Image 1: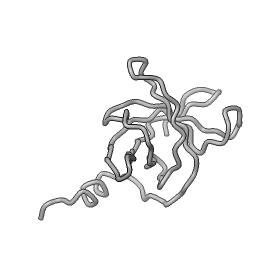
Image 2: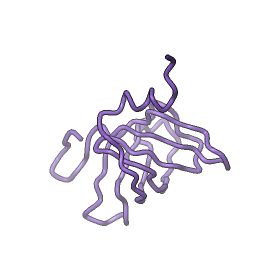
Image 3: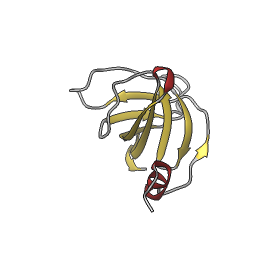
Length: 115
């Protein structure tokens, strides 16, 4: 039996995803990538990943990004920022792009901690 995309990705997932629509802030972490600040809304999330839909077309698999989730404002002390890697990019209708990121580690003021 051939793997369909949905079964292929579900096998790779480490934890269940929950449908949750929350603001996300995404910025590239590699200085070689064009700088941008994307503010999409999540579609679903797990303890080690987030899937969101963006109008940007500059995401690519393997891209390293800074992700703040959930995001409310630049100076909110409740913001949690992660170093993440894009693991899947899907072209969607109406010029949108579905992006799945793996949260590699969290960044906070007391130092770095594994996610």
